Structure formats: structure tokens, C-alpha cells
Length: 150
Image 1 (cartoon, rainbow, N blue to C red):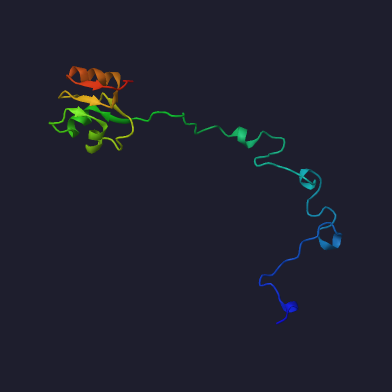
Image 2: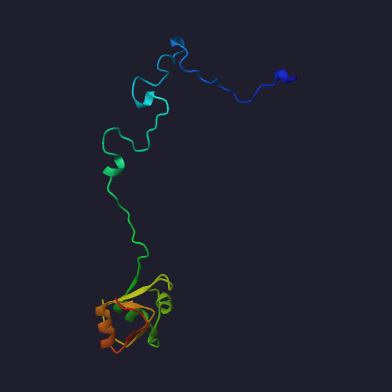
């Protein structure tokens, strides 16, 4: 085999020559249709361009805005605490709530809500509580230590 007999493995198609007469099938307007933006050189139509109408991005409603650094609390009700916490525990922390299966993570903030009744006094540490829950905790003889109540 000689150098002049070498051929590429993949068939290489020839470059189409536009605007070289009507016999080629791509003469006159060279496959660009008639007049307008598409027929001009250097045309630029951005994504979402709809001509003289209002842009599609302005028609579609804006959705999905998330507030930056919003606290997403894990919610625990007072009634759940009565059922899940053993009698010998009086100090409740997020770690104890996680062991009891009331929250998924001990690292995320926990908020106590007032649904249910407290039958024993508990001391809550590292948790926040609603105003109604705070009142029920204090009425049962418990307290909340070192957390802002919201």
C-alpha cells in the first residue's frame, strides 16, 4: 500500500457551496428563505425571541423564590413528648428527641408546639417553643433554657 492509496475510514462529505447558481439547488437565496432577519448575515435571535410579541420570559409567572437563610424548624408537639420520652428523663435536648425518633436531625433547629398536654415537668434545652407551648410547659412546672422563644 502506498501513500496515495490511503483513504480515511469514515466517509467525508463535501462542504456545501451556497449561492453558486440555481442548478446546485442552493442558489439565489442560498437556503435562507426570502427577506427578514434570518436571511441577513450576522443575524442574532436569542433564546425566547418571539418577534414583536411580548417575550415568553415575561409572560411566565415568577415562581420558586426561597428566602435566604430561613430557619426551617423540626416540629415536635407536647403530646408526642409525653408518649416517647421515658420517665427517668427530665432534661430534653435535640439529641434526646432524635433518639426517641421525634426529629430527623439533632443539628437542625427544633420547635415545640402546644398540641397535647404535658403530664410531667420537663426542662428543654436547645429548643424553641411557641407562646402557647411555653405557657403549658411553665404550668406543668418545666422550663426552657437558653433559646429564644418565637
